[in-house]
Length: 281
Image (cartoon, rainbow, N blue to C red; front, side, top):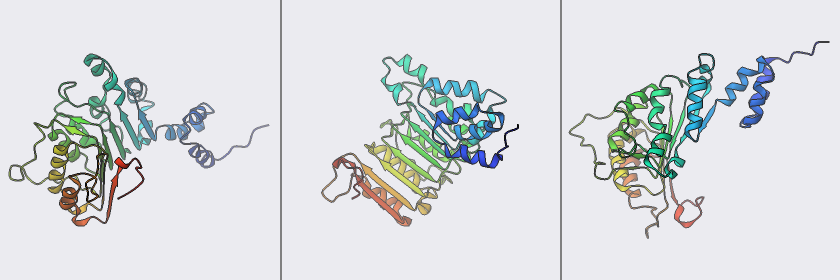
């Protein structure tokens, strides 16, 4: 007696409800061929690359596979986390474990559905790893990215950060926390020396954590010269440093709002130093 055939629309919906249970989704891929496409789609919606082993497996088994590469079309979010690399003992060990400097070149053009990109603990400092001169050009092929998170990213110069933001054509939301550039090189861009940038046109900006003042100044100066100055609608500012007597969470919060707040509709100031990150000012 043949078992009744359940329509694929129903099984696909059931499989979708399993996310984010990765173990259950992996089991679904082995049930039958009909379940494989929907299971793979859910498995690849979000990729969390926490170490170089996970990155290398993704490149060798998926990116370099003609049969499996199409699974990357389902990827909406990628977290590239190299925070653990900084705990390695020697410079050679750190360099061997780093993959962020290869990401844009490896995956350029292969992630058409990527909307959310998070870079965490990335060292683009010249003393550790030399970023390729065309790294920002490769990011121009990530046309679908709308949200970028930079957490504990170390840029060799602010110029690389500026070119990265300009390369992401669809970028709407930017979250920056504990991100740095070399102080002696993180100089502002003269509006006379260069033409007015056409990107990004942010609608949401969040600055959080202990920030390098020079980096914040350069970032705000740059964004003021982009369409962000008139497109920004949501501005969130928070700091882990002691707030001033007037309740502003950091010295630069007032200048950030003064520079970018002309069209802001939602403003959130948060003081994380008090120990309760859920208490807005």
